[in-house]
Length: 146
Image (cartoon, rainbow, N blue to C red; front, side):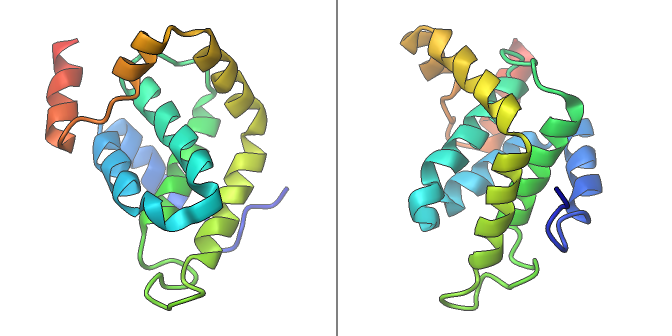
């Protein structure tokens, strides 16, 4: 399936973000914007949980290409300057929703494996793995300690 228009420019940005260790900043930006999504909120939380588990080194059973696709999709979601600017009331999130739906479908098998992994984890472990600290800096410090 072909990537949505304007999405491919976010792929190199996602690769750089991952290689430079800047994933916490994206996770926090997603958390700030997430409440606007309605029905897709659970799917965005799943992508956020995947990013947190990957960042913390708890879950690495995802292909690099799929991880870049997830991060690029989240970057597109938080970017105010995408195909339809977010400030356009009523339609600004339509392209974000379309891109997220495409990402979910494209990496669906990888997300199913992640869900299965989550289901096998103790609730206490998931609370630690998926906990979002107060700031991106705190998440980075926490990551360096482990």
